[in-house]
Length: 130
Image 1 (spheres, rainbow, N blue to C red):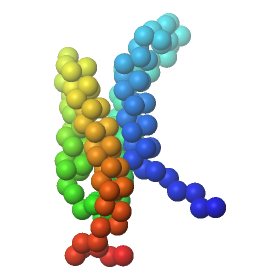
Image 2: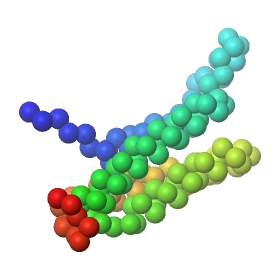
Image 3: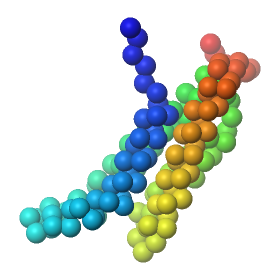
């Protein structure tokens, strides 16, 4: 039995986990600073989550583009979402307003990539190497 990873599902899950972390973690973990632990506004953790989302998403978008549908729209949505996530770390006063469209764009890109892959199921193009 061959095990295959659905990279779009993993990307959607990572995006949702990021949104949950950003929205709910502060509500549940407000007492951590009393114990000397600060994960809520930890820059390293935030950048790590962005890098994780970027890595999973990039692989998923590349795989869908190269092996299935050859459409740039999922890439563009994903890139815009990642750019907003990065800007969220720069403009801290409006980070919540940047997070919402970032997550919507990233999840939308994964959904569109997944649907395009299923519809086009190995649509060969001139640049296809398989």
